[in-house]
Length: 388
Image (cartoon, rainbow, N blue to C red; front, side, top):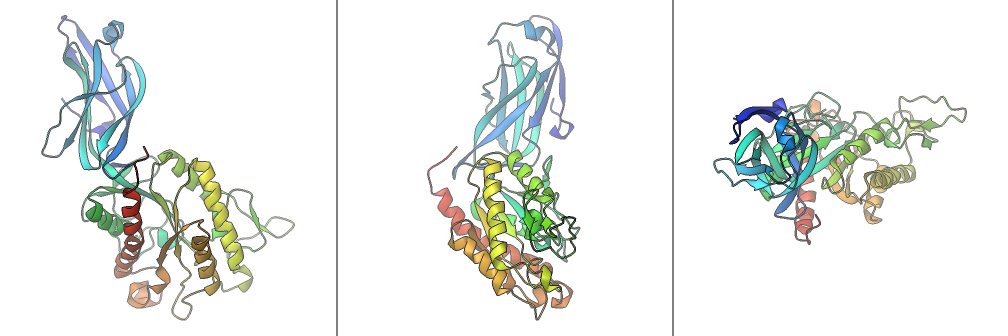
């Protein structure tokens, strides 16, 4: 008897061959429904498995090795064989993992078996082994597009730090209530690589790179809309956005996602109050600090893609200073080259080309530009030796 994982609880009353009746509970905390696990090679990934076995009663008194926690990884329409997991099924929390082929969605079934009989069972309906990306920056990295979009392949999902769900706008974890480029990009990558794709979004509208700095870092140039309580008149970052970003990175774990996709710069370029415009050299310095400090916080050398971004409206379509700072991060090797989205103009912007955010066609074009950068890089990475 299987229950959907969304209940996070499975209860089975059974009778063992010895004639006793027992109640056993099997509660899973991982994997989650619609979770995408970052693969460590072209053909494999490791699915985290954790949970709690409870109310085993007399089962806790059995001799060691008399039972087993088992799983089978089913492709839809096909039933796999049961595999024993490397945990001893007794009362208490457990944590392990299972190597699985790249692909999905898979349906994972779990059971506790004692004396040849299942005494607790549960399942997780959708688990994928594929590609995961963290997306950060300002509004065009979040949900401010003119048209809400959703995955067409059904193989793209989104994570807000606690739960996964199928990808449809607005993306959880990011600001705004409109559309994003993520479902479209995910569909393109899912089609190209034949694996599910997951996004972890935390972009915030209208934010300067200064607002993404770690807590307490100061800047002599105040962002638009910010005031200073410091006697020096400087801006001091509250660290909220940086904290959110690094918390998500830590939750995913070392090698738990492929890269950060950074799309930001409009709120630093060509501000109406020129005293709030950030010089390119400071933009480069601050973003470099965010990248390097976040890698330290995450505990591994996270790849960062930095897009070229400074467009506002017709007539204010680029800031050579900010664009140069973004390009300098590529040339110095601090970051990888993202798309040049300043090239998306006219009908690809909202309000018949008069706005800074993307129209529906612009969101699809934005997704296409990201795919052009990510696809060849991913092919190169997947050709490298596996690093579990």
